[in-house]
Image (tube, rainbow, N blue to C red; front, side, top):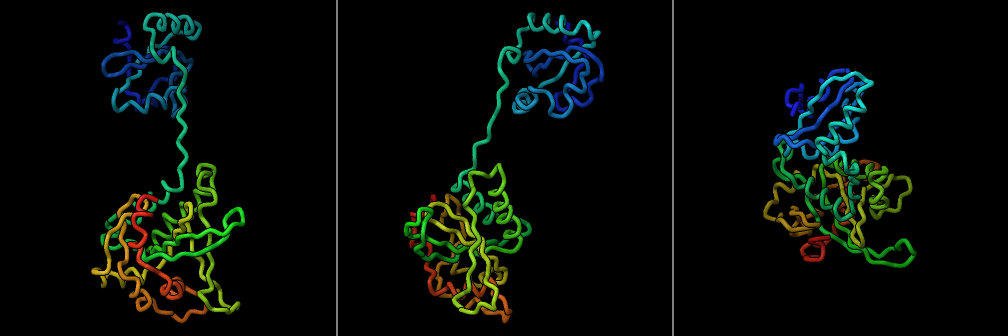
Length: 291
């Protein structure tokens, strides 16, 4: 076992390999040899994630604690030496194909579950109420095939930080190649809040569509602060496999939203307009618990 006398480094310190030609052997903590290779520049061969076996090895490195042992040889001897050590040790990875792992595409129900998990996680910045499911209403609209379909619209109050962070990041992800499975899930909903005045700018709301359920994420910091004074009206329910905070009695919503006098519509204007239609999401259980 002459390789035991060779110089070695942990896999995580591969950037310290010498810039010289040589043979390298990848060995785990139990001295099982996994791979034998050659390179005219050992450092360049293992630099970063360049080695074709690096990703495969790194996935199990915490369990096996790989080390790279090496010995320098003249460049004209590398092929002969490599084959000699492969024949001697018969390393598993030298006789197997490189595995490629394709990440499973995120499905809409998984993404909405992830968002609710984030929106209900307590942090130092949000130690108390972070978001609240205000209620739901039903709406009939055309689907992609121009047929009429009934949609359940769930209204969620979120703070500015989460709106401009988690919500907008998910929107951007749906437009990228990695988020192709979410394409079409995010839409912008514009509402005139029931006022027929073309001079006023409508309020814009980001909505996430999963099947026949539409999640409206309304940014309204003031309302969330006011709801802290009505804790007895808040309770936890399960939506999309997540435990979320919800409003028990939607009748108080109108009194908690006040028009701020701005020329353009604001989120609270939309909630005042929508309040008479909202019903407690308790009426949807268990329909949306695992949506």
